[in-house]
View (cartoon, rainbow, N blue to C red):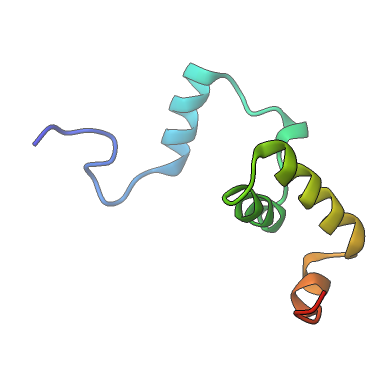
Length: 77
């Protein structure tokens, strides 16, 4: 079996980030979301086209003060 970066079960995420950054360039700060927002955005994006998912994400972010409020919202909303 060929050895690669993922052959070791304990993968150093900082090493992966640095190697990707060397090839693709740094992540620009305006593209970064906090971890919960990124999860919500990714979840929406898994079922929608990118443009639509960003619009849905923006509507959710405007409707609820924070993600805890969204989590506590009635299912009907």
